[in-house]
Image (cartoon, rainbow, N blue to C red; front, side, top):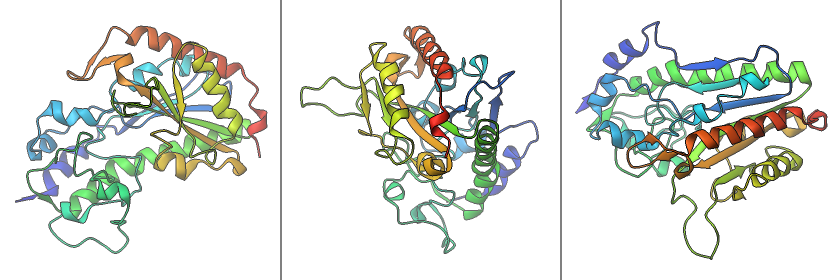
Length: 298
């Protein structure tokens, strides 16, 4: 069974549906920029109808409530951009045309990247499976459906993110993007006698941002009592790799937060720890905004 692109395209092209929100400070105070690409939870009805999974199973791919955790950023002088569409629908932390041919009813154009490890895992720009591995769709999609989603969600989000980076760099001479995510409780594995991390900082092993950035943020979070690990198991995704250009004054750090700190993973609900974590992150943001970041300029 093919899923027609027409219903989803018609729904998503409604002018009142925005793919993202940018929350701007009254007066930018430092070259910091925060993003939450995976916390969107606006699920189109036609997408839900085409899925073989229920809404709760689909939501396991979300970085639920992450935009709430960083809501203090604009008040402290830094913009925050967050997506409205869900990760199971379009993943903006993938290349634009990173697609799995097995999902589609016909051949894909030659420009599609069908050979990446992420595609092989079913986690391309249009995911084939949710984060827990279950297939999303009842049948195959038309390529026109992928084109519609990319045009409506992926492209506008990245255009807005790139514009914010350029604006920040123009104003301050450099930009530090903190790409905010969450990770499931078992993401870091077991054994070795190590405490499971509360947070993971991904800087592509020192290539996406200056080492002093990772060190300062690691020290700030560890000073609050959080167990912080670097690049294991998350070193960074497309956003980190694509935008992180330290020699050009653009530094990107991916921040993963353990979901049990603030939510009930099974029910996808806010947990009792959300308030305290949000307050701690607000304090960390305030301190980062006071730091001298001039060393980041090329």
